[in-house]
Amino acid sequence: MAKKIEVMITAFRDGFQSAYGARVFTKDFMPAVEAARDAGIRHFEAGGGARYQSLYFYSNEDAFDMMDTFREKAGPDANLQTLARGINVVALDSQPRDVIDLHAKLFKKHGMTTIRNFDALNDVNNLVDSGRSITKHGLNHEVCVTMMALPPGCTGAHDAEFYAKTLDDILAAEIPFTSVCFKDASGTAYPSMIYETVKAARKRLPEGTRLVFHTHDTAGTGVICYQAAIDAGIDQIDLSLAPCSGGTCQPDVASMWHALRGSDYELDLDIERVMVAEEVFKDCMADYFMPPEAKAVEPLIPWSPMPGGALTANTQMMRDHGIMDRYPEVIAAMGEVVRLGGFGTSVTPVSQFYFQQAFNNVMFGKWEKFADGYGKMVLGYFGKTPVPPHPEIVRRAAEKMGMEPTTESPLEMDERNPAKGLAPAEAKLREEKLPITEENIFIVAACGAKGISFLKGEMKTNVRKISKEHVAASEGNVPDKLTVTVGGEKFAVEFHGDQATVNGRAYDVSISEGQDHAAAASGSSTPLEAPMPGIVLEIRKRQGDVAQEGETVIMLEAMKMEMAVASPITGTISEIKVSKGDHVVAGQTLATLD
Image (cartoon, rainbow, N blue to C red; front, top):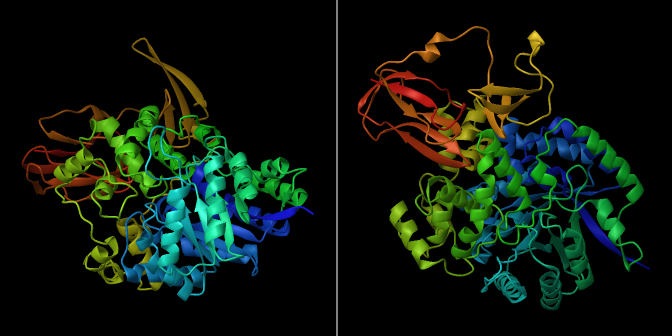
């Protein structure tokens, strides 16, 4: 009799993150959750990770409301699992103990069953408090060892011996857990490494310990990697449903089912009923824009290990900012950033640090501008990296950021940081005269200023869908695709709602009749220009205010990084030309000064 391999369906969390940059409306996919429930599926990945912040940042929805709805549709007996990042919980930055504990309390309150919990550096110290809080509040704790293959030619970590030591450290720290997951977010761990790792884990853990393996199909090897894990004795694998399967996502249920036909193993589900649910899911997502890179096999991933869940999130942001043409340069630059940065596993938040630093190296010159996360990581502010970062990179980071390297526990630093924790989050709510609830406190602690903006109703929706409605549709005279010739040069223009793609670069557009002569006006004012594309995060000056040379006037956010735009002169703000939440392009005038 074939051994049953258990399956968690990741379509509604990791699938969304990998395919759509986590930008999905709750109401759109709930019919698919109901169909999956009716197909007999009882284990779903339902939230957390990037699908926590993204609901506030892009969907303009409350993640706790989404969890409640998911529980209602999936049924009372479903195992609803979320993803947490150790001391970061569901934020990109690390948090003190009170925030870590409230995370577990609220996720339990809102219907979750299991939390898969990892640290991107495999620093076990970063898992102790979160693991204890998850268990204390009555949730299953699935502790993780994070995996990836090092770029070719690199050694010193990320092999079976390294993962066995990490597991030994977890056991020595007496972290409570109900299962162990080996999590490969970049899909670069190769079959022989996976087999040896799972075999070694079986020898170290008590008999009956539940073992899970997670990978992505970004490098095209997902199915064979799952086969290696199954042959080594894994109990559960993660699979997805089309259209959020293959490529940057997990392999499709049908693909894995087919690969196991005639073997000693079979998936613990009814494939015919699951295929019916998959068709419902395809219908639910039919009007969502699927980035072509989301479904592609990327041969460069072993050299530049970008996780599926981070790849499309970053390409979506690059599309938002009109710089998608620079993506090949950025992904190519990632290899060096990984090799020199201490071999943290390429999974959020470290994967974002890698991408941001590669992005900065391309846009501003190599190692001229350090991404805050990458710089702090190589300086030790997030814990101990698997191997020491390159000393020259540490020196440059310290010099550029004005910070000294540290070996102090990041949790202890957060504990004494007056800007972090529940009390300052509650103070911000009171300052804004917003309701004081545990949910709102956590939203602000995890999402910062954007959390406040969401609660004040100021956030703008940014979910990419395929639409035939265009800004001038009422006139009936603007086709979907145009070729525009200017000065003898041809431009391919394609409209998508309030955005136009020009020769592959996306821009926000608006069209109105007549000419705005003010747009062509000129004067003696000094413009304050955006140094790169981004979103207006904060406007610190008003019209009539005096700004000193070098003083910050506007804060932008680009690629999840904050960027201060300083006044080029000492002068009076004569006009603010943007509003909070606006998308801006490089060189756009944000304000003028006299």
